[in-house]
Structures are given as C-alpha cells and as structure tokens.
Amino acid sequence: MNTALIVLLAATVVLVGLAAVFLGQETGVAGESENETVKLPQPQTAGSISVEEALAGRRSVRDYGAAPITLADLGQLLWAAQGVTDVRGYRTAPSAGALYPLEVTVAAGDVADLPAGVYRYVPSGHLLYRLADGDARSALAGAALDQSAIEEATAVIAISGVYGRTTGKYGERGIRYVHMEAGHASQNIYLQAVSLGIGTVSIGAFDDEGVGKVLMMEEDERPLYLMPVGKM
Image 1 (tube, one colour):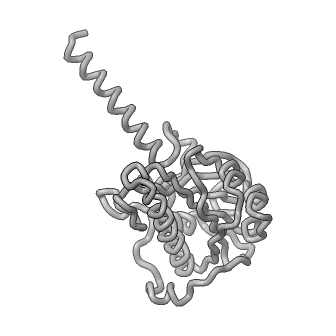
Image 2 (tube, rainbow, N blue to C red):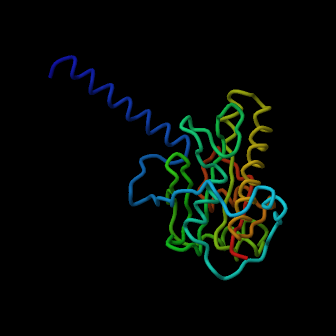
Image 3 (cartoon, one colour):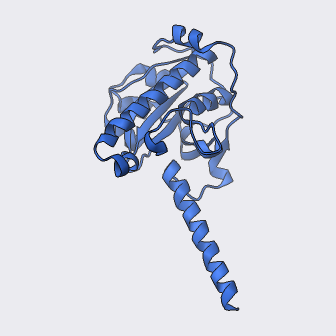
C-alpha cells in the first residue's frame, strides 16, 4: 500500500470519528442504527390558527382525554421546542451564541404508532433515538412528587440543559442563558399544543436525580422542565 493511500485512509477514519463525536454532543448518543431510531413525520410550518389566537388560548392543562396523540403531533411539539429551521442549523428557539445546550427527551406511553419507551429527540434528523423500552410515566411521576398529570398524560416531554456547552464561552453567565433558552422552548411547546388541540403544563417540581435516572440523562445534563401532553 503506497503512502498516499495510507494517508487518505487515515484521514477518512479521523473524519468519521469527528462526525460521531459531533452527533453525540448534540443528542447525547452516538452510533445510531435504524433499529434504534424512529423517523418523525415532516413538521408543518403553516397551521390552522394564528400566533395571536394561540397566545390567547394558552393555558396550563393538567387533565387529559383518553385518546392517544399521533406520532405527527408529537413530532410537531418536538420540532416547536428545538426543530432545525435553517440550513445553518438554527432552531425554533433562540440560543446564546447558537450553542444549543438543550436536550429534549420523551417518555412515551400512549402515542399512536410509537412503542412505549424513553426517546431522545435528534433535531438534525427530526427523529427519535430510543434510549429504553417500556412505559416510564409512572416512575417519572414518582420522581416528580407523584403528580397525576405526568402519569396520566399520553407522553411527557422533558427539557434538560448541558450547562458546559454555554458556560465554556460565557462563563457563569451562561447558566442564565441556558435557563432563558429552556423558557423559550417551553413556550413554543405551549403555543404549538394550542394549535393542535393538545393540553400541556410546565412542571418544575421534581427530584433532579430521580428524573435524570428515569430518562437516562447524561451526568452533565440537568432536567429543567417536565411537560406532560395529551388530548383535551
């Protein structure tokens, strides 16, 4: 094998490794396979109500109907929280320095065409990566003061933050920026839910360690919001 070919092969290995690292940084996972991922339906960018109507109708809802939400509904809510909206990687929620410290995880229990389990949302591919099988809603409710809205919801969306992605550039001030960004994402979910006829509520009363364990969060990841969702 000549020297030029060896150099080319080595460069290819390095590039593949860097791509895996980048993917792992964004999603908390690397080395995804088709068996572990669920492609979400294409998100819609035109709805049936105006932004003003969604704002006027936004309420915190803790009681949900028995009907499951669809996979398209769930995908739309996740896209509203952190979906990619630009070829440069910009997302639906503003982020200080475009550093995107948020992660979005779903505890799915009764979502049409989606097996019960814990999933991580991957914005760059608009897909779900399966972290664990089985219905985690009861365990998640136990980590959140036994709040019935979490156990009775069709699914629970969790917003978490990896502070180091932002503090690396902005120092301790970056912690505030992460919290601001989480608020942006939560409000986006609220407004999108109104347009879909779905109820949700933002919950902050929970045990961080317990929630992190149930949702298989990374060591440097901190849960910030739990948002149960379900048909009204």
